[in-house]
Length: 184
Image (cartoon, rainbow, N blue to C red; front, side):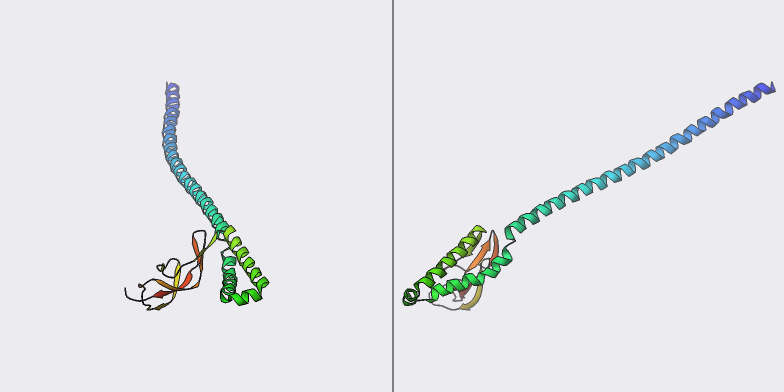
């Protein structure tokens, strides 16, 4: 009988041990599962953030490329503004007698100025040509001086020194003007 009892104990003890081991494995598996789920959640979050960053970088690159294409020539255009001004002044300063005396030179200057304006047009560089009597617009004009002038209202343009230019929708150079300060 002692042998039977030992055999029963032998059989019960491994079953209990196995059952206890199963509980430990299930508890450990639940903890591991929870840890893995948390890690999965964190990895998904990191992936979504990385994808959003990549999309933002792509959009920023596209915007930078577009701006470089549109406004990349701004520095060169700004450097050509004095050339435009000098050609314009040369034509404006000559009277009719001088034009007749040096007809070929003035035709050359006019053609050069027209070609420069044509090149500006190809690159969507447009002149800002204010007229005397127009209202001063600080977005497009730079006031070089203020002076009271009879028969004008305050803020009216009374003299245009240089024309301004826009490149696409940006101000490249403001038109330089004199503005009336006459109280109106």
